[in-house]
Picture 1 (cartoon, helix red, strand yellow):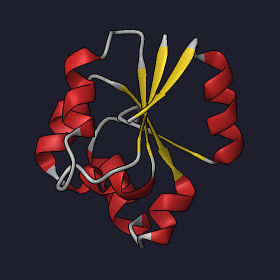
Picture 2: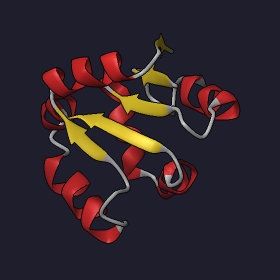
Picture 3: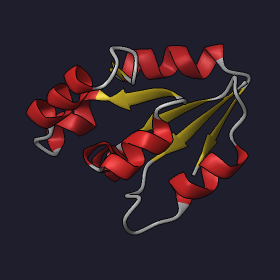
Picture 4: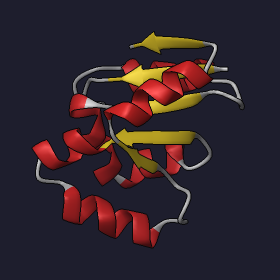
Length: 102
């Protein structure tokens, strides 16, 4: 069980796309930094819909995306992604066998 930590924008880097090629059903993805912007794009919403997905709250707020991300969460299923803080990030790091930062 791996936690894939993605930090770069899907528009400028292939980390998320590459990660999705290798992810296993029991793995999770954590979007942080500029990677949170991918939630605004329908193509990424569709590609991530079947993944256990976490998103860092501080990075959503830092980019002024809170209202848009909340609207996406309402539109998608309630469990599309989980907004977490840094203590939850640490908890998830401990729950998973390995963390890979892309």
